[in-house]
Length: 177
Figure 1 (cartoon, one colour):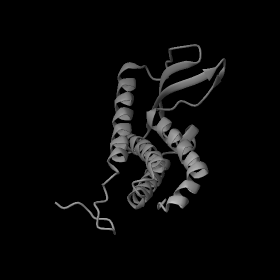
Figure 2 (spheres, helix red, strand yellow):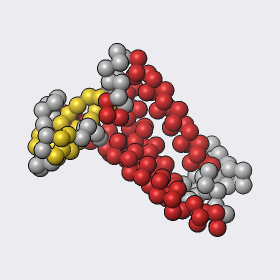
Figure 3 (cartoon, one colour):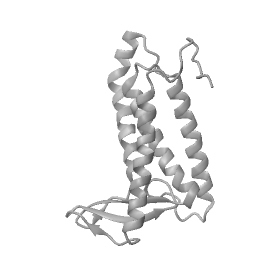
Figure 4 (cartoon, one colour):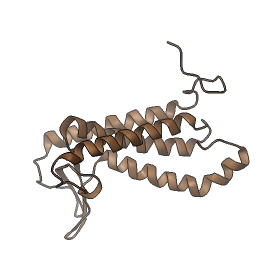
């Protein structure tokens, strides 16, 4: 089977292997961590690690911060649709991206890996497994997981790329997607 070619006649995968590896690594790490949390933690029972960090198994049927978690079930397929649409858009963006746009590529790979990790949960179980809980005294940040962390880091790197790298890409004539 021949590799898909970009408009310049090169294989689209040239220079993008690290991005693809990062996507797969995020999904695998996320799923392994969720499996370990599900197997070893009691639901809703915090395992205290430090004075500000717990491992607490929770199931989120909503989106970020449990948005729409009590909507009655329709939100599962709504969030699956949104995740699939965003994942396809990111894949297209990555395919059009110049291999030299490394920071942007890694940023998108983190967001895509996180989106796919949570999408897997939604399709397979109808909820996303969360288990990382950070707090200060009685103030608790909503529980999250490895996929959520990858999405946040990827989004922060996207902002950094937008703020710092745009001038460099314009100078060098690199296609930013």
